[in-house]
Length: 374
Ligand SMILES: [Zn+2]
Image 1 (cartoon, rainbow, N blue to C red):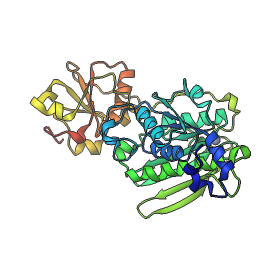
Image 2 (image 1 turned 90 degrees about the vertical axis):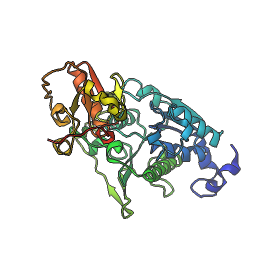
Image 3 (image 1 turned 30 degrees about the horizontal axis):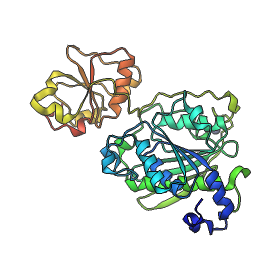
Image 4 (image 1 turned 120 degrees about the vertical axis):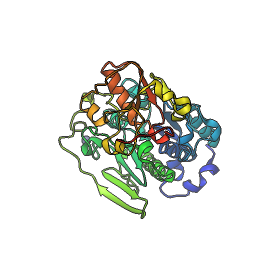
């Protein structure tokens, strides 16, 4: 370990040589190498956290670069974890970085997470957040939680039995559609702020070690929710209550069965159907080769839609009601506003046995062809 590299933090009373050794021995698994996970990983690697694991199945997309500043323009199309690991390694060759280019699932979660001390949630979907909560509780590890949307962000540390878990707050995933960053938008710097808060909480947990959540005045956000509203830079720290009937932490860790939840934000749902960009289908009226199915809600439909489209909102599909189209002689082109909700619709239609489906990958928002109003 090069002492001079860490001199600015080793001078702190709470760190010192002993604390730096704890950081070097620390093992942190970061799930999601995106807006939150990437900045968190950079600060942890720079601080000398000895072993960092990165889990993410995605490739770098141009739309990531607005906030995922670990990636370069030239990284587009390449595996996120491979590129992020190379960048962290170049930043600090003293740390070990393991890349897992896969999606964390109930089947692989225990095996991947077992060697690590702390799990950092850099995910952007409920399926992974609930899985991580149950996984962390089952393995007895602290979960450093973060979430960002639009101009707001939150962070906490879920570490039952020292405090509540995520399911004490949200027992089950939301049943109605909740927009994610791709749909609702996010300011890139929010990822930097909340990801850095997560890195900070992780460092505090590593320094406190096995002595529990509190030592030397370092109090990680166990049982507390940090909230930032960037419009006014108002911050709040809310005390979180443990739910005695929590579906997770009221049970014994050994009784926790990990499950993959139905995921409204599943970016892979459209992988097995033909995907078309709006620009592609506008050329030579190629859209006429399809039966467009608009799954947006009524207000959105009324503001304009594709010609000859059928309207069947996602909310109806989620209630188990399927559209009856007069003909299915051509492929059914499923679309929403941005290509996110339509993936959920595709999942439902495929599960109902529909075939000959196609996907408008960038949604009605990118559509520059003819629009009709009804
Ligand atoms: Zn709980």
